[in-house]
Length: 113
Image (cartoon, rainbow, N blue to C red; front, top):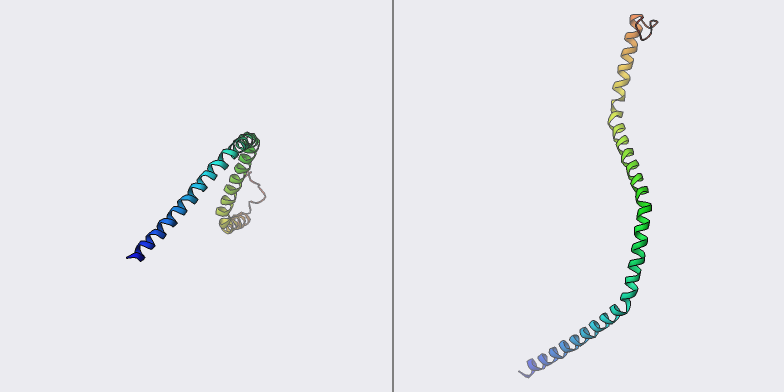
């Protein structure tokens, strides 16, 4: 029975030590926060103003780059869709040329005169 009481006393002592450390840590946290708050506030104000100014300058440039990138991607997608049709187009041109050559009307030109 005394062993259980001894373990309880040890556990309570450890609990009290941890509580004391937590209280000391909390006091140090409040102290550091109070000391560094004016510096944090000044930095946030300065970099906030600089950030807005920089965003006003760089924002339109990045928007233009994004528009050009989207247009290039659309052009690449169009080329990727049309490129497989190139052999069919070449066969059509070859058929048209052979028809044009076999009818003997190549000297008349496009107007049909």
